[in-house]
Image 1 (cartoon, rainbow, N blue to C red):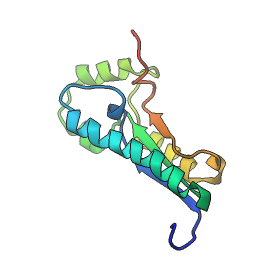
Image 2 (image 1 turned 90 degrees about the vertical axis):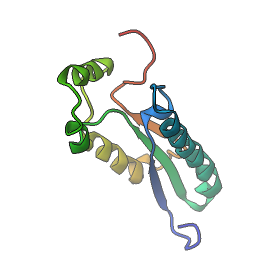
Image 3 (image 1 turned 45 degrees about the vertical axis):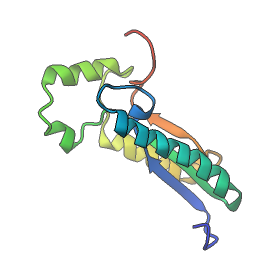
Image 4 (image 1 turned 180 degrees about the vertical axis):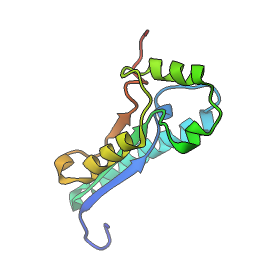
Amino acid sequence: MHASGAKGAIVNTSSFVARAASAGTSTYAASKAGVDAMTRALAVEVGGNGIRVNTIAPGVIETPMFNDSGVPDEFRQALANQSALKRLGRPEDIAEAAVWLASDQSGFVTGQGILTDGGFAIPGLR
């Protein structure tokens, strides 16, 4: 985009795990935190050329892979209850956030990581 002079938006995918610790995810969390840092740096590097760079950080999403993973119903419900919205995410939740970030409606948003986790990563007791 930069070399061709094109303007527009880049939407990267990170994860709520980059901000909310979970046992057994250190390597994954570190890689997603790297995506977050890259997003901020790239936003500064190319912003003057009309290119916005943001990140979506999904929470637990009910994808076919998640649904076929053998997660017990009790654990699935516990995850949903941990969310402020008391549900797991749907693929459409992530897609709609990505469309917004790619659209002109978010034309003054850059260098941001948008948690799309239903409030799962909000610290505090539930």
